[in-house]
Amino acid sequence: MAAAVLAGVGTLQAQTEQTESLDALNLPANITMLSERNPDLRTATAKVNGKVITGTDIDQRVALVLDANRDAEISEQDLQDLRMRVLRNLIDETIQIQQAAIEELEVDEAEVDQTYSTVTAQNGFDVKGMDDYLRTIGSSSASLKQQIRGELSWNRLLQRRSMFVNVSEEEVQEVLKRLKEAQGTEEFRLAEIYLSAATENQEAVYANGNRIVEQLRQGASFAAYARQFSEASTAAVGGDLGWIRLGVLPAELATVARQMQTGQMVGPVQIPGGFSILYLIDKRQVLTADPRDAVLSLKQLSIAFPNMTVEQAEARLTEFNQRVLQIRGCGDVEPVAALMGAEVITNDQISARQLPTPLQDALLGLQVGQSTPPFGSMEEGVRVLMLCGRDDPVDTSGPSASEIRQQLEDERLNKSAQRYLRDLRRDAIIEYN
Image (cartoon, rainbow, N blue to C red; front, side, top):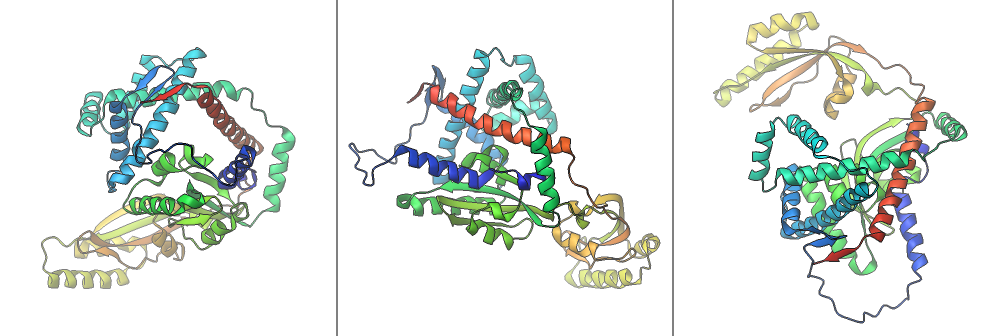
C-alpha cells in the first residue's frame, strides 16, 4: 500500500526525465539531415565489446517470445519490431554478463544448469523433454541458458550494489504518516505500455499501439509485451506501476483509469510525449479491508449434456433450475444432486479475489445457504455455486515499518539499476553488422 505515496514512479517520472533530457540537448528548431538514410534498412546483428550476437541468437530468442504468446497472431511489421527489441535485449544481456565477469561475479555452468532444470520442471518437462521442445519451436537450450545466465549475472551485480542503498527511519515514518492521512481513498494497480512519439511519427506510433492492443486482446501476455515494447522505466517489471492514486498520473490517463473495471484494457491513449496502453489489475481503498479478501466455503453443483439433442438438453436444464430452487442450505446439495445425476465439488478455502469478477460480485451479495444464478453453456456444462460459509477480512492496519523500508529500498535499487545499465551501455563498444 505504500506504493501510492512513493514519489517518482512509472509514467510521470519517465516523461519528466525525457523532457529534461531533451531540454539539455538544446536542439535547433529546424532539423536538416546532412545525409540520407533508408528507414526500412534495419541492422540484424551486432558485436558487443568483441562478443558477436548472431542472427541465430536473435531467431532463437524471438522463438521463445513467440512461444510465450502462441495464442496471438503477429504481423510481419510486428515481427520486425520484435526482432529489433530482442536485439536490444541481447545487447543488454551481453553487457551484463561481461560486467559480472569483470567484477569477478561470473555465474558458473553448474548454477545455470540447476536453474534450467528448475525451469523445465516448472513447465512439466524433464531436461531432455525441454531440450526437444525448444528445438521444435525453433529455439534451443543454449538460448534459454544464456538468458538464465544473463538474469543471474545481473542479479549478482545488483546484490552488490544493494549494500549501498540506505533508507532512513524518518523516510519510513513519513510514508506511514501519509498512508494514515490517505486512509479510505481509492488506489489503482495499473500496468502500462508506454510508446514515445514525436509530431512527425505520431501516426506510425499510434498504429503500432493499435497492433499491440489487438495482439493483447487475442491473448498475448501484457507483461511480456510491456517488457519488449514499453519505453517507461516500468518495462523491466512487465509495466506494473504498483498501487497508485490517480493524482500521480497524467490527466488523460487518470480520466480513463477512473472509468475502468478490473481486468479491462484501454488504449492507446494519447498523452504528452506519446501514447499509453493501460491494464487495470485491481483497485482498493487505502488501509480499508477489502470484501474480496473474504475466504469462502463453496459447493459447486454442475451438470453436463453428453450426446443430447437440443430438446433433451433443454429439458435437463429446466430440471436443473427447478431442483436448485428446492435446495435448502448446503446440507441439501448432495441429496438433490443425486436425484439428477449432477456433480458436486466442495472448496472450503477460496478467496473471493481468486474468482472471476462476475462471480465475485454474485457471491459477495449472497447470504450463507444461497446460490448464484446458473452459468455456463451446453458445451462446457452448466453449474451454480452455493455459499456455505464466509470469513470476512479484518480491518487492516496497513504495512509494517519493515515492509515500507523494504519497498523503499527496492524502489531505490531499481532506479540505481536503471542508471547503472545506462552507464554500462554508454561505455560499451557496440558495432552493428
